[in-house]
Length: 77
Image (tube, rainbow, N blue to C red):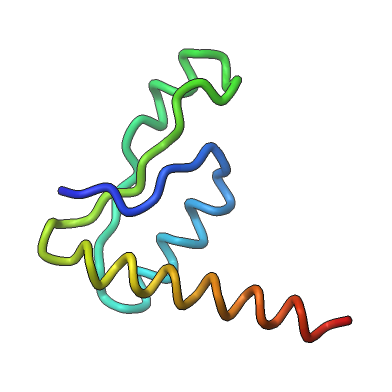
């Protein structure tokens, strides 16, 4: 398993999992419970992990999806 995203934002993690699921890549969130033990102060970010063989493709998909969001936001002005 390889980490493709670290974040304390549950919305971002959910979005990333949905992007990867749409491409057929299974992703899991690690450290969710550990971050809650710390009082949700953000000291321990959650990790989105995928199988090692999917990691490069997953990173590329997330980068592309994030760029599309930025382009969409820039076009709304």
